[in-house]
Length: 406
Image 1 (cartoon, rainbow, N blue to C red):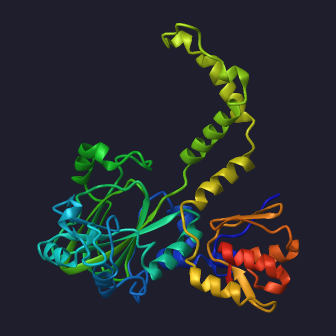
Image 2 (cartoon, rainbow, N blue to C red):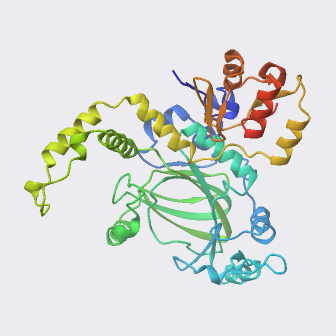
Image 3 (cartoon, helix red, strand yellow):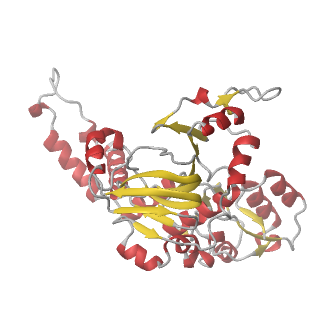
């Protein structure tokens, strides 16, 4: 039977067992899971009385857009509820960096002064404090997490009333912003059911009495399940809020995997591969729907839940990154390796041990030459020495990005 390591820090149930990132946002994690998750919104004034400056600040925004050489799509700009064309805020980077779609801090300065909202996208890939927090939050939730920041000038509304096809946590970073929340027009929408397909319904629902009307201040947090309508307006000065998008695994995703596996099985069935009659017009009585339906149901009934779960885990590995690792640091670790060198599992790998292979976000590594008990200790989050792993195996794991210095 495969061994699955917990996807918290270092694959161990240590700090991750308390779900620290989630607890910071919702307080009572058990109560949130039972009463709120995917059911309704949660407003938490002073969720963190010290604020969220450890994740993002105004100076960090300036650094990202002015000094990091950002390119689209890591930035969007919106004005009057609509997203602007990339050419409005990008330009070549100059000598040695003539790529045309780099963010222009000069253009952004003028646009922001004119009332445009800056949207820093995918901060879970570009800003280390948010990378770390999102990885821990994803481990706490069991669902993938992304992060965008919205920087809005005074008295401006970045986007019209809309809903997202993922759950969101809103963290107020700086300034004050008025939020208006309305009930869904389509509860729990899927990713291919965007609000733009229901513009009229959204507009009418936004005219009704809101379920939440509030002003978020620094340190406040708001949770919205997918489908809840929302809009926000900056009050007074510049405001910054961080939106953590949670792309929930759904029963529909399980159904997709069921059908995929069932069809794979039907490809081995001669009756399922049979041609329709010559000259068919694909009329209802010519497509053998009853026969094919029976074959499909039999294939579905024969599926092993463990096989489905493993396929879902394989998909999950592709939705998040493992903890960042430096190629030069790993090379130095490998070349200086000694028997006493202490190593640990890289964080957030989502590891499975199947027979003699470790499968993770870093790929697959053969561990047949490593004592099973040592492998199990490593995957449980314990630190081990290169001597215990065997120098050759340890070097192989380091170069694959499976282990890092302990």
